[in-house]
Image (tube, rainbow, N blue to C red; front, side, top):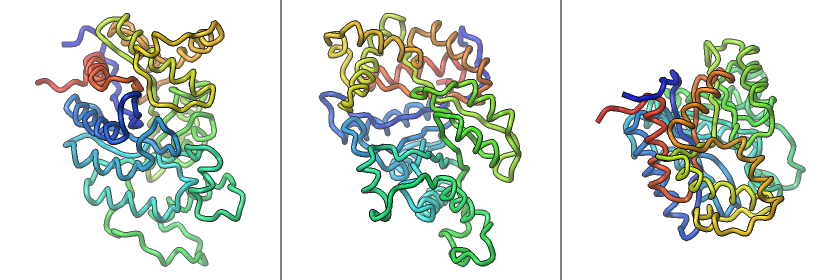
Length: 344
């Protein structure tokens, strides 16, 4: 029995297939699958993978492919995108690919959607279907189109109304809107969709996003009541000191990104030896406000505060550290804290 109060919310995982220093892209992809198998056995609810492009630190820009591999490698956990960056894709193609996944693994697929391109402007331009027009924020238009493929809610004169998305006898998986600002929270509430807030990198106030979504939620055919996922950066280890040491990788990674360096995740040894300036240390201290680091007691208290203040229905944990075994141990400890671990 866990010595900590049960959080009464499910735990899930967000993993970006980070490349680590001294490692390779294929190793990062294999590590994601190993982690998915591990947390599946621990009783986690879902495992999401993201879409980023042209980043040396991220091995996968294809969440649909990775989700399929995760589903094939696991038994119970839901898998999906956290998320597909909808501005980069044809809504019809997204619908087709995720209906195929749903057909293969019914009831285990999630379709999380993001509004940002997940990359720099030049790469975003290369990803678009047309290169002779300036990219515009047409996320809402694309989202409505994607949803219309499922509901059939086209205007009578719309040319797409005669197109069927295959397989026709498979529903589109549940749609989740992802966000790091208030926009997606408002839109998810208005449309009656699930919402996931990226607190692990957001600068927007987490309480505003999470509580306004719940307050303004309108029930829909998709979802009868609000479901808000809070994504958190967490490093948990057997002791506070060990967790602090492991989190040095996160500190140095964020500092490098601040300077436009998207390098592989450094080892904690590299981070400990880095010649930080006083300005660097102030930046790291500010960023640590978004990262929960510690042994089980400290992390349990932090998670409980987040659940109480944000009214999160679910916590999704991202642990961007160097060593895979340490990452697996972190998720083991979190499962014990939350009381979700499956007995051996």
